[in-house]
Length: 215
Image 1 (cartoon, rainbow, N blue to C red):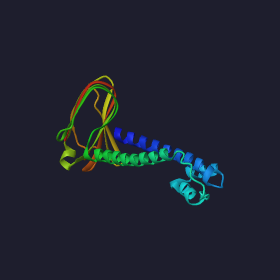
Image 2: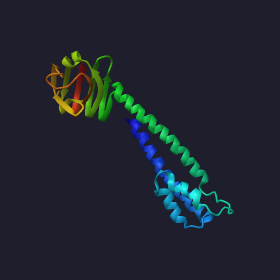
Image 3: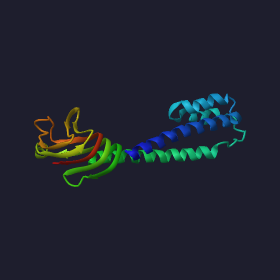
Image 4: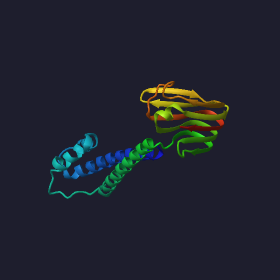
């Protein structure tokens, strides 16, 4: 998730930087190379989408062929274009990494934690949290037998601890606060079907929690 957010922010920043330098370069260049108002071409380069305004300026607006180009902001524009291309690659990588993490059952975390450990080996998910306020989520695939014998052991002090199961638009929540030891039937009693299911542990100002989910 963090990589996805960082790559998205870098991508957006590079888009705005590219638009700004395109406008500046077009304005300065049009003052010398165009017989039309430089401001109008700068606005067209920035606000006409998909680079159409900038391309139109290069093809039509630069009508003073015998006048040498000023070269103002040229290097900055080239550097911004390169950064924009790299940002696109990083954004794609971040998006793919996030999608793989979701599909592979990796734990996705949001919130504030103190003294937190996670173990997701095999058909088991164990979390120990000294202080927690947030969510921890996994997406896993369960068979019929695993659906019918989903075991939860949980102890905690203070706050509210719960687990939310989600499949499609169907949600089911189980309160795990303080002490909970039970095997639940996700198939019949909770209305889910075998296959992929999203599981979210929700911590609300919880202290000294230990939760083990096994299937």
